[in-house]
Amino acid sequence: QVELVESGGGLVQAGGSLRLSCAFSGREFSWYVIGWYRQAPGKERDRVAIISPGASTNYLDSVQGRFTISRDNAKNMVYLQMNSLKPEDTAVYYCNAEHMRDRLAYWGQGTQVTVSS
Image (cartoon, rainbow, N blue to C red; front, top):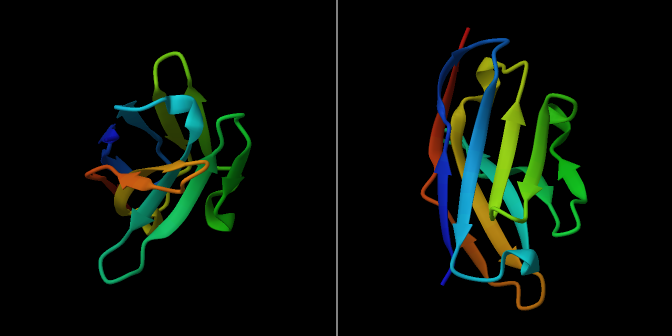
């Protein structure tokens, strides 16, 4: 069983920065693709960024150039550095881990990010 624990959310003014962290435990980290997703009230959950075990990344168009996803395989950690935050980035941010072979996926409990204008 995989456990994911997010941290680092909070309230920030527009233009500010936050760094989210996702702590992974329970299985071999190097087999998992890790993604950050977000869900605003009344909206669908969107994939924000994803990183493979080999550190290939992909971003939602609206965060490209502002957000950076990274992973530390020695610490079983994934980070999302968020810069130049906008009010429309306000959402609950979730960490997701998907096994590369069997596609089993796990979710964290989420962390709230609120960007004030």
